[in-house]
Image (cartoon, rainbow, N blue to C red):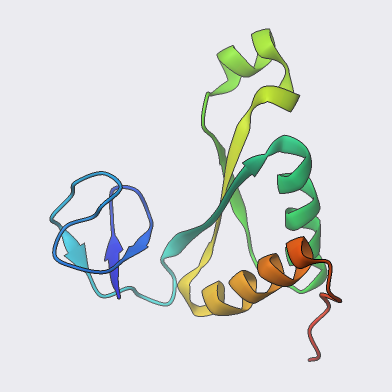
Length: 107
């Protein structure tokens, strides 16, 4: 697994399939990795789930503030990022949440 420093995604292979970047490297624990791209409402729910499980999470709007103001937040797409050292846990929570399973992980 390699880390693309341009699009902040974990990828396989010598080139990022998302952005074409060839500057891939091994991920560091503190690297924020994209874990999901969701609509506004779903991203808010997932952010709350991560907060409940003490997983740091940052977000980035795909369209930016100007377009979001014009179109409204419900049409925006949000990318969520978590630190690499919590990526697998965050991925499990996301999959469990959207599959309708219980999602609070034991400490």
